[in-house]
Length: 139
Image (cartoon, rainbow, N blue to C red; front, side, top):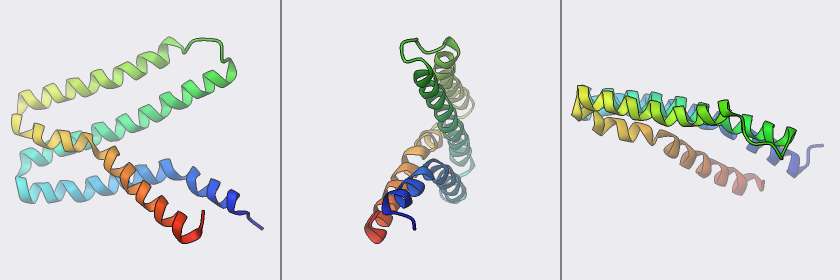
């Protein structure tokens, strides 16, 4: 028989994969909507912002996992240069993409910023879903 603690742990362990799926769902709904309402330039910015945010989310997950593994292996050593470099390169790539998009079409920047906030919206959806499940199932 599965205890409430085990059921809760298995449910919450799937949060990252659910957040990734929610990000794809939100992007696939918001891009066509923005295309119809605001036009192709803003929709294109939203596509690029969503792609950058999705990649950034997964790269951050890898960096955090690498840092956690490194801390567990040897808590007294400093993080590796490669881990720190990957952490910093993410922000440089986002800034470069923003610059390219802004220089190509300033209107696309209005779509880029909402796209960059895609993980925030996905995490908010996940939090609402977890609250609902916790209340409904008593997890």
